[in-house]
Image 1 (tube, rainbow, N blue to C red):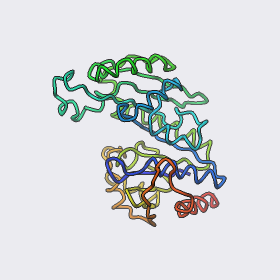
Image 2: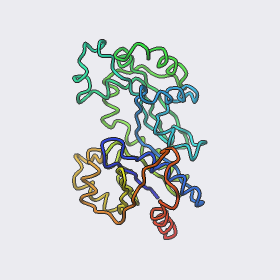
Image 3: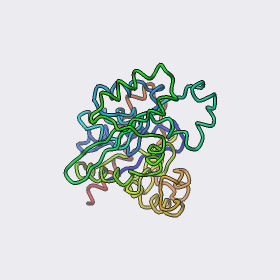
Image 4: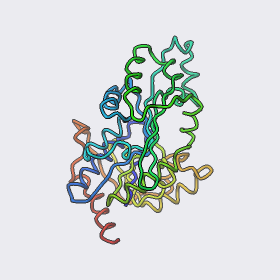
Length: 291
């Protein structure tokens, strides 16, 4: 079973808290659950601990992947998040004060300093790390030493890649490979809880065919039939790319079955309790029982 967690805001919808809480609640019910963030990026200035953990693990780890794997700490970060990026801030002087220009359409690719793509073909799982020296030259000098130390610690050693390579990755170069990793973890678990990106309806083609969707915004989670959500995506996707669809647009077409009022959490790291998530757990049990 695949549960897709999508956000209704461009940022800070609460997807990661919901996905992690769901995995924890399912595991407590004796249901084998696995967290999955197909594509993830972390701004290392905002979350420097992702850099430090990457150096410790010797594999590029994003902040969302590290948060999602807390309920299953032995899970390889490469399988939790097959395609990950470390995003660097810009130094205004080093980009000739053209911050707005750099942050334009191709801005994200130009800020990716380190990337990892994981491949799940056959029995093997292997990763490739990439290092973009152009992005590092645009970043504050205070970051250079730490980024280089992380790059030197990664296994396998990163290959040098420029802005164009990062643009190709963001354009979907590896999405089919990411889906191969989804198929692998689906064979290992009863339920895979997939977290989308921003307010994207689905980050890959396979994740656009979920069994259940949980659409979250501050204060409310909406439960959506997976088949209806998938059909809604098909109606509006550009060139068959579900990541071109806004999750709110898909939800408006699909409608929702139920909703959950979400309280303000004193500590988001603790997540939501099992009682609050019972409507979702019940649907999971009925789905698994009917297979």
